[in-house]
Figure (cartoon, rainbow, N blue to C red):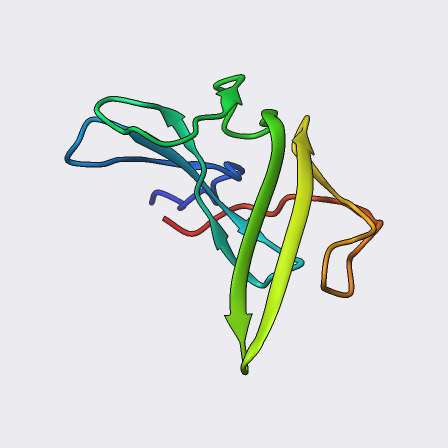
Length: 107
């Protein structure tokens, strides 16, 4: 009888049609997924350096995202280093200024 082993990976690499690769992870501050581009393919936008570690990732430079939640603009600024996410104090959520471990992502 085989047991299913839960993945410890906190990054899911997603390859898009244009050949670019996104490093998708769940942001506990925004309570949603972020997916910075880590390989550009034919992508013309920004890319992030990635250490290729799916369990203890490091992404550089700082990640910055903004979205609208119930009519209000929400901003998230964070560093991802060694599998942890450190939110800057100017992030617009309850984890601003804190560092937490990234959790395994559902594929």
